[in-house]
Length: 165
Image (cartoon, rainbow, N blue to C red; front, top):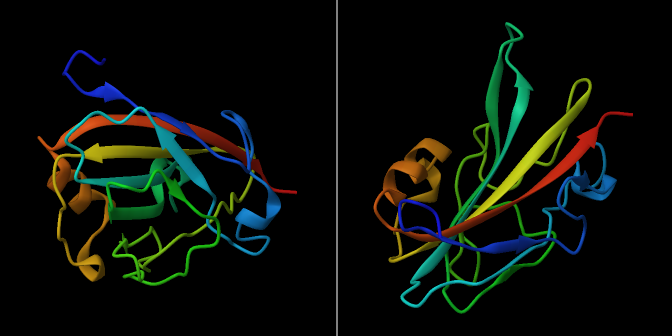
């Protein structure tokens, strides 16, 4: 358990291990299919899950580092502990899952596309005590983080790597 009372989730992917290379098909150089993610160890009282994927090594136009958002997912039903690969790139999925805005301003997954060097892609899963009910057309990473404050019961992450070429 973390000092703030937030418990640990174990996050994994059938496509890559922690600190391993993300397969080509899950990048923008390939098919840009969303990665499969699974998690376990959620405490009682979970009402939904959320996922944020970001690249902390992405350069801005001025070559300063910033966190580029690759995926914002929320209102994942509490009975689910897996996101299948290749989710449709749209705001609302048939099972109620919502996909917010990535760093390109579009809803859904945007795979790795590093301009140079090896980048880290951090996929963080959050177990929440409520559904958030946000409008995916207006939900960025920043808006999701704000909405999750005080609602996180557990969280965990897996980090994938990708290098151009």
